[in-house]
Length: 93
Image (cartoon, rainbow, N blue to C red; front, side, top):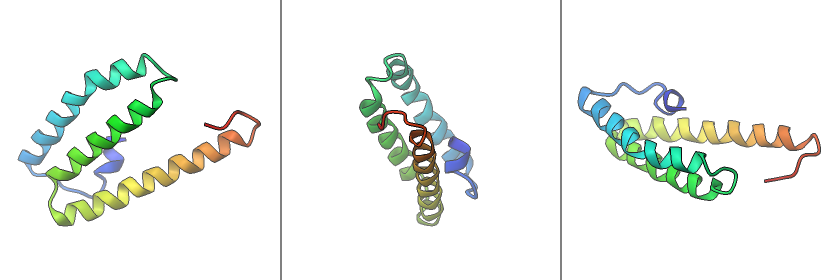
């Protein structure tokens, strides 16, 4: 997922350090929420949005444009995947 968000973006060493620091700071919270699935999905979604915003803040305006396109493409792929999964008669989420 990280690679898809930053596709086409060349990060400086300082940016790489910041991104790694952000990712590391969110990992314990994400792990805790994963252990509480499926009930923790809303909190997990909120946390992922905050992490994505933190990543975006590290980027230059030009990089942010590419990042925004990457995130939008990821969301679209995820939505398409959900639609395909519910066609089999599963419960909608």
